[in-house]
Every structure is written in structure tokens, then in C-alpha cells.
Image 1 (spheres, helix red, strand yellow):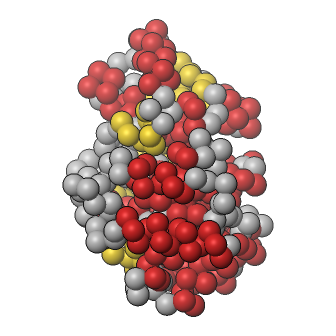
Image 2 (tube, rainbow, N blue to C red; image 1 turned 90 degrees about the vertical axis):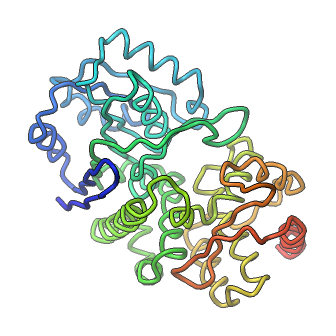
Length: 356
């Protein structure tokens, strides 16, 4: 079992394993006696054995409906009610066993119930393992806006088991690949090169390659969180693909998965970077071809791009009236800018719509 230490304000470790027994050993080692499990129907059905083995410590379980619709205020309130029924106290640990939706909603609940109780993140999707389970961001959607209400709240620890990925459907697996491409393209050229060279084995979910890309992504995320825990500057590099991506996700009424929206966002934001002279054409093409290899979208003509500026103007990262972007200026590196005008964005979107 590998361990990545995250030296945030509240330090914690990310454990990466390919043996499900390691989780129980961690609970014993850390003397965690009481947990309240939050999961969803799909995870419960696919990993019932893993969850049942925790029953000696579980004082309650809340099973959510899978999907983005569960990231709502109604869900938050329903979990509060279950925690009260189970007599959860500050010695209880919430165990969030699931993908990004479960992790986000559980993190928010943990950060607010009794002014904060411990949470253990047990991500079961590739996207959650490499990204959302690390760093303490949580929240839920409101009025059609993605993650508009939330907090920063670091977990007790994160436990990643690669074996969970074997039961992911193809769409969820590809969505996670989208986030890993983000890490390589915006943060680490060596990771992007590894994905290019090993893309077939990654697509086939070979354990060796999965362990490498999850380890590498988690290490990058942990390192950035250490230096910018509250997402004030450096950490915003990880928003590459997300400024446009979140808007697209909202405009699709969440018919596009988060990873699909991000893959479109990455290409559109990279095209914008190319048009203003940062990226070279061959660098842009390397991204497009990799997105295409994994059968992820890089454009969607069904989206009403005329509304995209209005959605982005409500982005929580916005400064004054300027939309903030993390734009790659070369493979493995990105910059934060608020210098992009609405006219430039619209021009690029219209140009792509005419070409693709």
C-alpha cells in the first residue's frame, strides 16, 4: 500500500492499495470504532461485500440515488436526519464510499453537522480517486449551478482501492480519464507522455498503469493543495477545462457527465489558448487526439453556446466582471488569466462550431 502525505492545515494521508483488506486494517490501526456510511445504490450493489464487512463498526448507512441530482439541499437535509436518528457524535467518522457525488455531499455534511465531524473518503470512481477526494472541496448544486454552495474541509484520510475501478461502467471510467488528462496537460508533461505511451493498457484497465496514473495524479493534487489549500491562486490551475466545462455541464442539464463536460472544456480552453498565441497547433492536436482515442467528446453542437457567457459570469472563481481561466501555455504547464474577453470566447466558439 502506497502512502501520499498531504501537509494541509489539517495534515492527512492518501493510501493507495489494490487489496480491499487494507481498509479494515487502517480503521483498526487508527482505532476508529464507529462509522456512518454514506454511499449510493450502484456502489452498494457492486461492492456489498466490502460494505458488509464494515458492519461491526457501522452505526448507520445512508444510500443515495446515483447521479448529479443527489447533490442537492434536500439530500443534505435527509442525511442530517439520518445522522440524528443514529445518534452520531463527534467521535463518529462518516465513511463516504462512492464517486464524486457521494464524496462532495458527504464532505459538506461532515463539515457542517455538529460544526464538523471526521470524514474518511473512500472514492470508488477513477475521477474521485485522482481528483475530488483529495483537497477538501465539497458542496452541492443549487438553482442549476454546479457546486455553488460548499466548504473546504479536509478528510481524516483518503483510502483508494484500484479494485473498485473494475466494476465501473465504460462511461464513468472514461470520465475519470478526462481528469487525469487534465493533470498531465496542465501540470505534468511526464504524466501526459505516460498516458500517450500507455493509452491502450490504460484503456484496458491494466493494474500497473492504473496504479501509476492514480498515484501520480494524487501526488500532483496533494502537492498543489499543500501550497494553496483554499484555492486562491496556484490550485486554480486545476480548473483547466472546468470554467467552460461547468457551464457546458449546466447547459446540458447534466445529461453530459462531469468528465465529458471537462473534456469539451479542455479542448475549447486549449483552442482559446492557441488562438491567443500560447499553445502551438501540434500541442493542441495532441490533446484532441488523446481525447478522441478515449472516445470522449471535444465538442458538442447540441449545446446552446450563446448562453455560455451568462453561466460563466456566475462562476464562483470570477473576479469583478472578468472570467478567470486556467489556460495551458505548453504541455504540462498552465497560467491563470482574467484577460480573455467575452468577444474572444464567442469568436472561438463560433469558429469551432463552423469547423467541427
